[in-house]
Length: 253
Image (cartoon, rainbow, N blue to C red; front, side, top):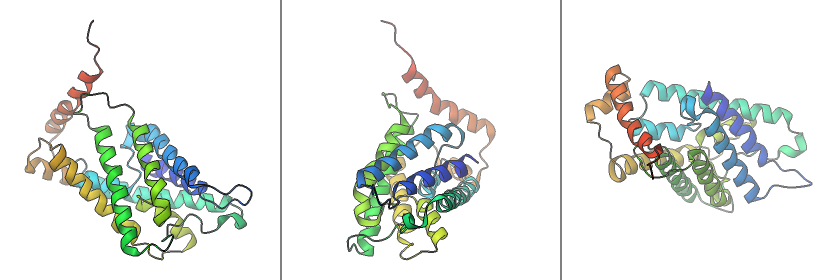
């Protein structure tokens, strides 16, 4: 429910910022900040409930990194897709017809080719997933700051560049919601292939090169299947939480 609600609000606000208001049309900075603030707000709102993936690419990255079971990943993605359609549908119904324009549907911009678009989406999603991992890694003992702000800034950063190429997706659900409402799926595959490949690469880079996990392959397989024994889960969570607790303790002067 958290993934469905969070994604629907994010799509409603984000896509709404890209509508073609005649008196005051949106700028690239306006749209980028809205998407960044939107995702940061939703991470803060539902992050403690579901982890606030709000993006199939994020869920796939966590699946590859052995942080979520396959069944839960499928449920998350289904909730995200339904939420995106719901958010886009409500926005479509509330928006005056003359303002809808292309309704924020992602498409190729400024004569960009399909190959260029996929590559841009790949890199933008890769930096987002790396930021998410680094911002939420409980093994860090330094001052991480606020994950919601870091992730929001990462999304805004992606939009500052990606809007010129594809309108910027980095999120297949964000692209799917408006597309299904208006029935426009031209080059829609780009906004699945690019983000998903970027997410998988980012997960492999972070979890197997930059900051490898201590789990063995049997444990990773058990997590994927959702069969990791409860006592092992509690032990694993305790090990993950210890660095965070230590980083929050104040040393006496």
